[in-house]
Image (cartoon, rainbow, N blue to C red; front, side, top):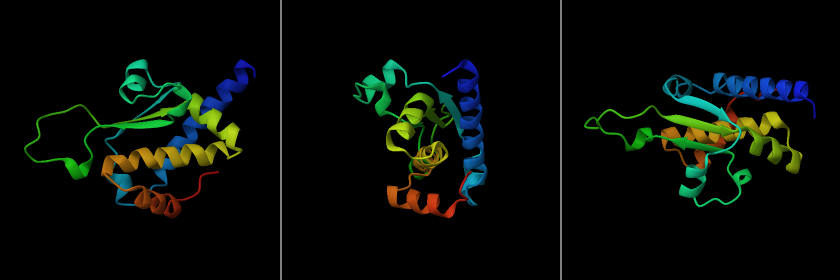
Length: 135
């Protein structure tokens, strides 16, 4: 794969993340506008160690923050909620499974944003089914 191929894949990846977030149904879209989405190649070593993950390809995404269902008006100021998407493991997963990259990015993005709301896996699946397909 050439550098130009990687640049095109990076642009496609970022565009898919943006389109996925834009396609979230209301009121979710409005409620997650303050969530920071970071795209990194891999999780850092501290994160992998904290989660007891040996292979960095095993972590596709991560939510860091306090989910809305766990917050209190008595909370002190905290860091912003963040969703981390790990680009290279997502590319690898899409290639290994034969799933379209757009579908994997969409699934991981919605899943991690769902953690911001404290949603169950079943609720996240329903949101994914309700949101517009990105292609």
